[in-house]
Structures are given as C-alpha cells and as structure tokens.
Image (spheres, rainbow, N blue to C red):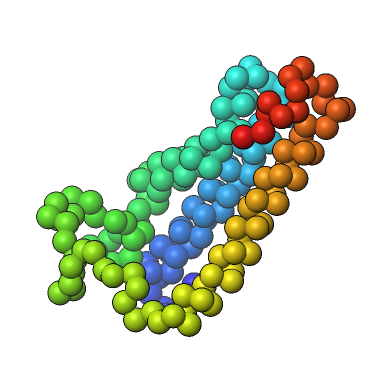
Length: 153
C-alpha cells in the first residue's frame, strides 16, 4: 500500500522497492531477447539470454545498495533487508515437535482414495505427454540417422 500514512520515509521506501522491481523486470525482459542482437559474440548473447533472470536480480540488488537508494534514516524507512549475520546455526524447529512428521497422521482411507484419482490422472498426463513428444520429435521429416526406437528413453 503506497502512501497509506503521511510518513514520507515509509512511502519513499515503498516507491524505491517498486522502482527496483520494475528495473529487475525490464533487465530480464531485455536480456531475454539478447540472442537477436547484432553486437557481442554468439556465446555472450547466449549466456545473457540463458541467465537473464539471475543477471537482473544481481543488478537490482547492486542498485539497491547504492548510496541514496537505501534511504534509512535512524531506523525509520529504508528498504527491508534480511539480516544473515544473526542467523542461528543450531537449526531446530521453533515449535515443540520433532523434525519428522508422520505424513499419514490424520488421513483416513477416504482421503487416500481421493488422492489416488488425481494422482493417476497426473501419471497418465506425464506418460501421454512423453509419448507424444517422442513421436513428434522423431518424425521422418527430421532425418534422424539412427532408428526411431534408439531415441526412446
């Protein structure tokens, strides 16, 4: 909610976050089409296209650490950041329970039978999708040198 109160620092941090999100989207979208560019080598263009999201996130994170973007003023406003310096290294559950939870606890036979129906449908979807894909990609128009059965996995 941009500008709910009259706190200028809070509103500025929200707008800065919005702008950083737009910058990230724009960089990723621009680099998505890097293979069609005429500058850079083919390997560089392929790298930029393959890793466009990671590059956009790295650039937006670097931009957020520029002076003036942080906007923190005596603990008021500023971009919310995750503090990894104070992360505990003794990983344990916060509730009073064990790590391992029984997956069938509270599920009766009707629930299991109800889950089998969509599970079987997903199973059929994957099998049919794999078979159709293998048949379409091994059609004679692609001039495969090995017999069609060789390419089935």
